[in-house]
Image (cartoon, rainbow, N blue to C red; front, side):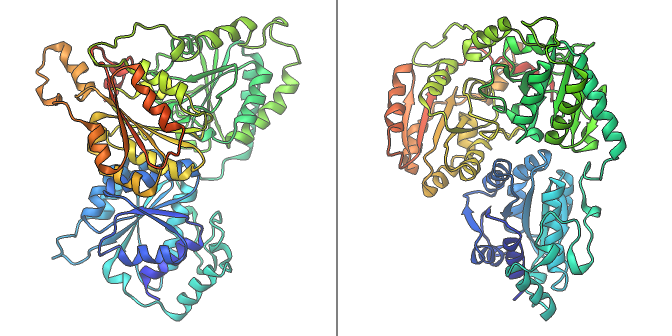
Length: 584
């Protein structure tokens, strides 16, 4: 067994289920080794797409995904997707062959590239250390919640393993790897490697006494609060029962960051997304809170609408596993280091003693909740409930009308991925999702062109739900090669393209100031015809009645994807656009 074969065997034994990539000479053998040991390999048409597929799969499955690329240009092609994953703290392991000869045209400083975009650089140094190096890189991704680029030098890949190392690999494959087999272990077994050196920020053991004091203080604040609001982020995934039990006791309203959309779906107290995407009612109620508790949410400028969504006199609490995340985006009055689920349980136990049953002013009101407010949320809480003047005209459909029609047509069991662009608020806010594991929003880097690959990774992680990709025309054409991947994988995907024949964000940002816009406007493209060329079904939508073709496709057999090429109106900017440019 050589090093490249050992890397594949070790990762498979640690529980890696799937790898995405584009195979070249440098990663040919390690990719085949992954497949040989039971890892599913998904071939993309571009390394950038492969990186984003792996990112989305890891986010939506809760497992470490693997990206495998060619040395040099394979890494640079994937770099935007790697950057998005790194900024999102996605547990992603990138297998990057490395040209070490100074004369190789493939040689670049791959470790430097990783560090430049916020990923962690690692390397397999030799045949003697291949098990140690691979396990440590995997653990750094899993436990550190980070993106790790593992360099595999070409000359090291071909080295033959010493007998004792080959034996260790066989032990792992047989399930007898000791602490190496346990991916959650902080000790790398008989090789004497300890994990803390690779821990991410906040992975240090918290001070137990300090945590208990903070939990007690949060319970006191909730016991006194009259208008509490909980904002859940991606770090709160899996904690809905605990947060709802606590919210019920103190009368809290619920909201989420954009990436956690759907976490409280179905609750009569759900305000949906906080921040620039917030509905008018949600913004009003969040601004009116006297206590905001952020659960696994860093309260970024997007979640707080550049700080305007939280009133100056509101008490702000942040709960996070990562101590370095506390107060990173805005000052907080109280920071609590801890797991969201366990912290909510602990706070509830204390609140039971601090806040007697029925406290809340009257029998009609508990905390922020009242029968009248419940009726308002039911009437006005969703963006589709907000009245608007339909701007559809001259063969173009209003994007709100289009998305509401889609929301009514699509089955509830759906998973939605959204690209970046002027259009993105419409699918993000007018399409509902059934829970907090049904919305994938790769927007940490705000690159357009990631949406289709995001939908592919999401579809593979959530195979029992209908995948929906929402793209602008710019992002769709930038990533169009991955339509072949959708068809090849047999994914029953709905791909919606909001086509305004422009980079709409730039049109609406610079146009009012009189700047020329020829560089950001384009002639019409028959995207439906392009999609048919890839083997998709396709329909061009100019009015609501054209959506009948989508309804027919949904009846089955759904044996190939459908592309909905929507010619949308473009006379006004999206409501969140100016805020987005303020964040540049």
